[in-house]
Amino acid sequence: MSTEAKSEILARIRGALQDSPPVPEVRRTYRRVSEQSAADTLAMLEDRLLDYRATVHHESAASAPERIAELLGPTAHYVVPDGLDLGLLPGDRGGRQRIVESRDARLGSILTVRELNEVDAVVTSSTVSCAETGTIFLSGRADEGRRAISLVPDHHICIVPTDSVTELFPEALARVEPTAPITMISGPSATSDIELERVEGVHGPRRLDVILLS
Image (cartoon, rainbow, N blue to C red; front, side, top):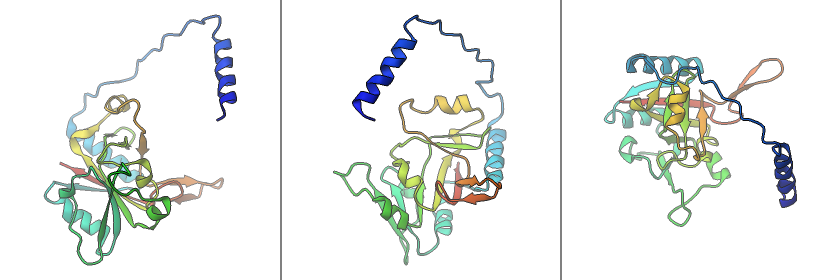
């Protein structure tokens, strides 16, 4: 956007607000605090994710590496953010290769979009999840990486700590830094054309595996 266009937009806004119209009170009568048990909330999230065609796995820190190795396969080249706990990942054996991406080009490599498109999968953590809508929030933290690494590869393995799962959207949003670049994931990327034919993988990963980590 040019400086002139931005100035014109701001001038129009100032003109519209010259008479200082009163700001209407927003009635927040919706639920903002869950009264549901943690077990029921976790079951709700899993049900929503399965409905969205994601695959859900219940794992511990000890069992997660083996599960992730199974999901990746023996020859996958995959990318992880530099803040992810590498103890949750399998070792590089055979043809499997892990690429650790730095968020700072001065400290390490940042993959190009073409390079990201050539990797088989990405493994990230997550900030918080909302069971009511089956939505996982990524906010660019060190263990999640930049937005591109979770959108370009065709397979996303997302680690969701069970203590980060909330029932309600207001609860989830309250846990996210307001200025963070938020990516909300509800199942694999999917869209429908005018004839309602479902197409997956157009705007993001075609395959989503969720590790519920307890």
